[in-house]
Length: 369
Image 1: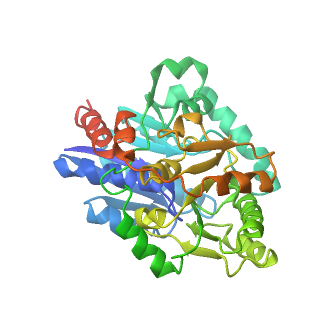
Image 2: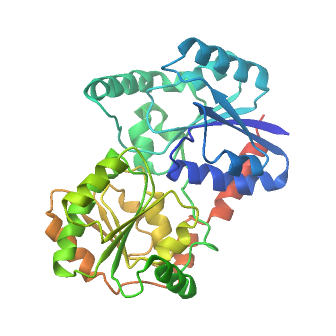
């Protein structure tokens, strides 16, 4: 049995967590791979889901609050774990401790997997430190890692130096095309349960955080409401920006028109309840939520910070964040009746079918030296 240590998943769950969970769900079926999930902190909401698949969830003390405990714990886990590979899912190279320890203790395959095309931070100090640490570690990443993966070419070009670009492997954020598909029965049931039966419903699925740019989305929705007072906004996800967004919703007098669901596991049903999917991120490595929205047939309006290769169905419009909320509102309203069918075939042709992508990844891990 090959043993793989997986890092990167955290709370609240977002795209990276869904990718890891769904890929492992399919790879574990062969029973010849063991995945351990490494978490920094005291809890992880998806721990039961990973453990149900046979994964071990391992915890480290906070690097900031207990640096000595963190270093000692990390060294012990990797030194004693007998791992064949480390699979580090990253949103930046500010912390490469796992790769450094894996090299020190002889883990032969050390994968760094890029999921972003820009850095994010909070606070004035981190605005300075994050880019500096990322740049420093980027210069030496090929001395720590053996394999370089990314969710898109854009994410790979951002994360890795030019000298390793010829070794880049794109591992797509694929979708379960048997679960994410247009479903009129599911749509009707979910809309009825949420009180959306007769409402034009704008939707968004993402972690509630700075880089996803939800404050702009609320401004856009306020402009939509002026043209269609019956419109509703369905926000799926949770995160550190929730309180700020709740205050903005109240300030814009949108409390009766915005539904915040928090973290949900029935994302396919919620996407089916929507009419148009909107994703105004500042920057994305790819945008798993957009792929999932396309899979259920939704027209999508996204920012030009999202890579163009996210458009797998021809039903994605790209707008600049310099455009006014009113301009975005007009584009969204024009897509009111643009839902599609037959989207699974488009995703499969583009290589975004989860079963096929997971089989390819499983072969990689099974063939580890």
